[in-house]
Length: 210
View 1 (cartoon, rainbow, N blue to C red):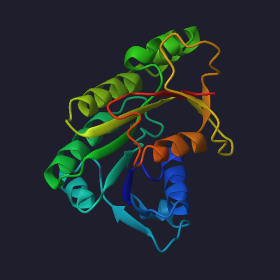
View 2: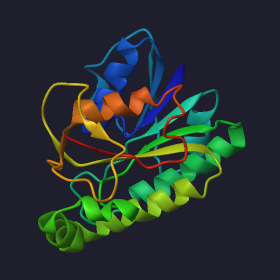
View 3: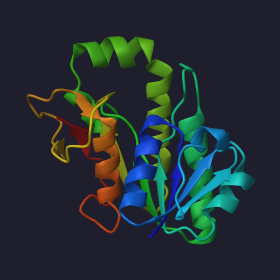
View 4: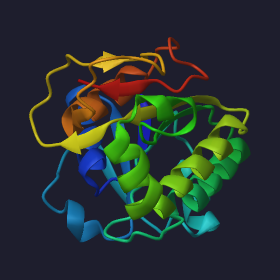
């Protein structure tokens, strides 16, 4: 399958690339700085240099792809619109080229998953410290839900380091109990890639946590 990863140099993106290549997919890594992927070489990997804020760059990259994985991040910036604006450009390009499958990484706490958060995440982190990032995730999800594409929004809990386990909770309700509110980045990538060719969560927004 031909898969393009946006946010490919981020911590989730790099896991997506590695695991997708292990599974035999043809992977395109969209990034602003190709040197950040200089350590990743594979005959089925193509690096596409571009800016997600530039619709023309995104449009060229989407052509010929089958699945789009979005794992955009804001770096160290607490105020950024890269997720919402970048995803909007991706959606427009997908429609232009007839690419339907979109798997987008958001965050646990958005929309109807807000009830999954504890006091710290709900009121201190997303309610104050990371408020602008959280609002950008909310807008990103709105664009995805209204896209008319075959989308799945993945809502992971707080990231931590660790190996892929393949064992985690997903698709739980807003009142789910005993969530650790943590998930390894490698397992986030694992779950996202499991959506390739799987319609179980089509037009749904499953949460992800241990």
